[in-house]
Length: 375
Image (cartoon, rainbow, N blue to C red; front, side):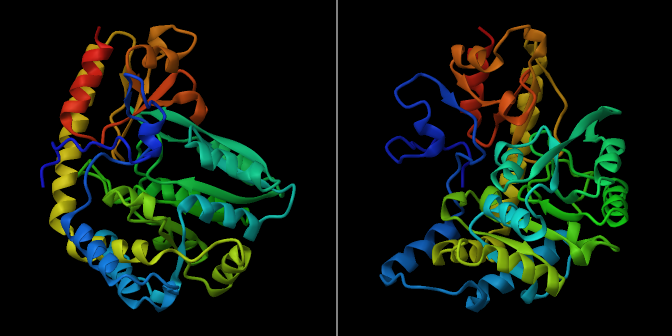
């Protein structure tokens, strides 16, 4: 497959493209890619459509998808899980909202690192909980958690849950073993449940780092809720399918009970896409990583050329977190749109002087975007 192919998404009611419908603004915001799915996924979905019957399918009984998840996590992350640890969910956003319901009571505190993507920032308030923000700090040219702040906030008896994002969205950091050990110790010390959103964990672009799932942590791993999906990596987010890995039976039962009656079964198409992604698309996956790495290198070079912009190169994701404070404008997002580029507004993530650019697109789109920004 050529990742240089430009796919016309007009008329498809794409969430990403509808925002700027009828405007000469390139949409480089919400985190889905501009790439066609791997051919094996497309073919499998075609065959399922041709079958013609779309009745109920209980995910736990769809053995091929469960086996595929076990295979993928072992291959990618050297993590041996049992199929019964898998809880299928219609997205990681519903999943961490269910975690809020499962492990907290009204008025409890939930820790959220900032900047972070909007649905995670919103989750505590939606569930009548108090959000406490954990800052992100720059250390040795790399974004990381403010661990002093994490320790202080976790010590509050009202703090019951830490929803962590690793790799970190939007800054793109992959947390090290040492950093995860600190998180583990703090959560255990203060009896805080750890729910880790790892939806970007298969989009590691820095070959010198390796993702470590929260569920693999030696001391707290069995008590964690690790959220993953094929959706970002294989561009199947619209099929509404993700999964939580919860090794502890009691923790898993609480999670499942909290979602009962409100969290629907994932769809047969989503299960099938996940199965095929995790079993038949290894070459496509590697080719995409290579293409994204080239795109990232291009973005870094172009940002360096622009007055008022700077960035720390992300280790993972297909998202560039760009500091636009040097522009000295009141509204960074309006400035970007005035140039014909539509990224995600930094203010939505908690840092208004930044902007988030999605570079999971043909290189020609990036070239067009930076040509506009340079004028």
